[in-house]
Length: 162
Image (cartoon, rainbow, N blue to C red; front, side, top):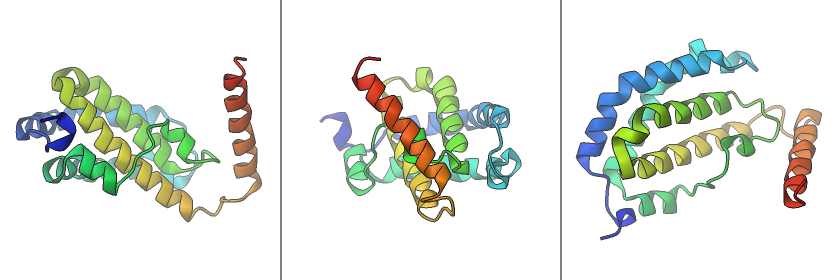
């Protein structure tokens, strides 16, 4: 049976849980190195979300196959920074550094199963980032418009090979 039709093996979840302290340690160090763009992006506030985020990933892995999860929680596999036009969303640094920490600590140890872990993680991150952007007071502001224009310029330059 293809990997996307079955739930993740409980051994993989157990291994991921065993790596949790190392993931959180690396994640916090990376998060503290990021610039603080708002009071909500303070690492002192965000570190308390790590266990909940990792719990959500484990719960998703236990309850659904990747295909079923993505059907209910579609993820655009694109950089998370692209999910926020103005770049001020405090969850950007949180989830981006979390992904880096997961890759650094767990990718090699989980082998092929890591692909599923990162898909679940990315879907949760994207959903949370988009939800916060949906209620952002900067939405539609000059900062959003300038950032969107800059991102479009970069995309067009890439398409034109420049």
